[in-house]
Length: 592
Ligand code: ASP
Image (cartoon, rainbow, N blue to C red; front, side, top):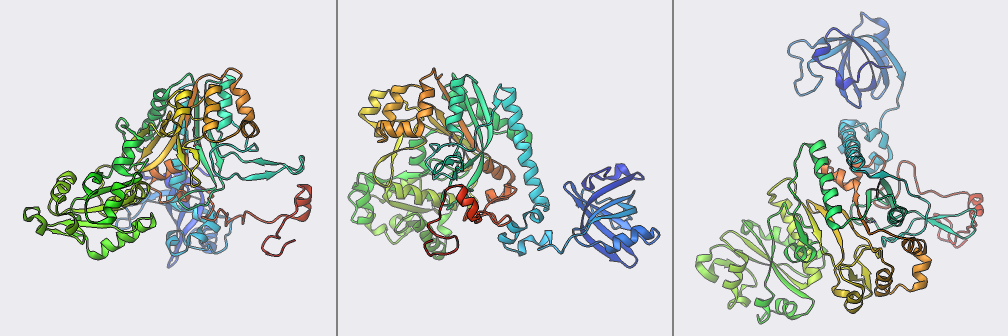
């Protein structure tokens, strides 16, 4: 129906006849001449309709915002003084000869350039309107270029795109499953995959050697952070590989992606152990654009007459650390109070600080509610922290977990608030994760998932599971975990040992993952892989603020779709077929 996209028109087409199809972005009536800004996914072009063409004029007169039109006309230069150099099509206009209304449109719920005036709920409900905005189109276009680049790279490197089931059994990523009742198996349920983990391992057993998939994953978690119940992974697995192989292939993939799509050449990714990351940044996904680092001062605080510091300094699981913020002495009392409330979110009971006004004056040159407790150690402390005039030192003193989370979050917040970034992109690998962590009930839980290979032998794992490291690796970019993976266990004895450490009995292991264990017994090659969170990757690359900005039809924080109104109730017939009786009627609290 069209010869050109609106956004493709330019001076080189002057005097040519073109046919456009698109939406009325704006319509202006200039005393007898009608101007239509016509929009399609490639951009906006100005169309002029004058009364010399009465049919075209009548149609243009009828057109309103968001009507769908087909327009034929001739391209000409805009008259001097009306050109708009900021617009790609701003030097030319189309003098229409034919205007056809292909469809009308009801009044839109918001004007595209006034989307900020309505709440996100309105935009989500009418997502098809929101998606007409150039920013949204650009982000989804970039997403498509990203998946294209990734696919091309993986295909070039011998990876096969293989689909895995959506209706399946529970998978091991540790979140809550979305369940789907079976009609043909009364009382039984499918689970939607939290990841293709088990299937991709079985593809390695089958001998496919190199697999990838751009895979939908489902996790029924409380959506505290910026999460979606269904999200997309770039899922990768390969056989006869070790850590360096997987890290090398995927690092190259991301580097090539950034060059192709953003024209950015990323440096070689540094590697940091999990232990160092926690010690220096309080986080397993440190944002290395921010130059601030924690400095440990436990040894100095053991004997100070200030319980808030000496307590954690002497406790096994305690930590006292300092964060030096250059230039931070200019922070006001009010700002410091706000940072104190901020660290409170992470469980910190306060935020001690010292302003370094003039070091040459000794203790007199410091300003702080707590410095009086530290006379004997203050000089050593300042030296160790590298304190200079104009700095502020913030302290974290609590259980190590609280200090890491609170001071780690403060570090990231200060980086943004004070614009401390030293570069645009800071990728790294975090390696040497612990194999296990203690969950809230004090039990050992897998830090990644139970198929991650330990770095030690089964005997050492048995002797000292808490100290075991895993063969896992995470790729981190600008403080966001882009992807994570591991070398897997392919040896049954090791797998048994890991289940034992996790307190998973033989029966439970068989019941949950029997099919994988059987597969592993049939000649499993050494293998490993990794999965990237595509939504987050696209968000970082497009500068989106949330992953909702880079997903065409996202769900809300309460895991609902405002446009389709999903989830919804179903009829009694459907429930009956599924052998389900509800304990409570939907939208009603009485027991049925
Ligand atoms: N399946 C893992 C995940 O979803 C990634 C991996 O180990 O490859 O986090």
